[in-house]
Structure formats: structure tokens, C-alpha cells
Image (cartoon, helix red, strand yellow):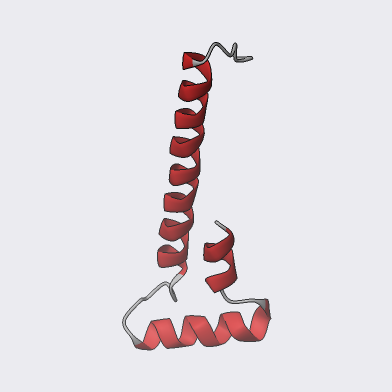
Length: 66
């Protein structure tokens, strides 16, 4: 997620430039959909990894608070 956030525009000017350039390339939403999809993918990867960590912990005898 850190890498994703670092790749996104910072501030108003950079955001406007990013959106303008994405608009020129045919992305009618200025690239917001692309950013949203990338963030959702990162969150899904984080959740999947956490479920794996919990599964390993349970196999080794940990009791999880649900």
C-alpha cells in the first residue's frame, strides 16, 4: 500500500496535472478509477496475507480473538 500511495499524485497541482494527462489518454474519470482499483487490490492483498498469517498462527496453537 505504501508503494501505491507514493505513486499517486500529491497536492492539488499534481492531481490536476495527473487528471489532465489521464483525460488526454482517454480516461474520462481522470484516472481516479485506476487509482481506486489499485488501492482495492492492495487492500485485498493485505487482507489475504493477514488471513494466511492467522491460519499459520492457529496451526501453531494460537487462539484468535474474534
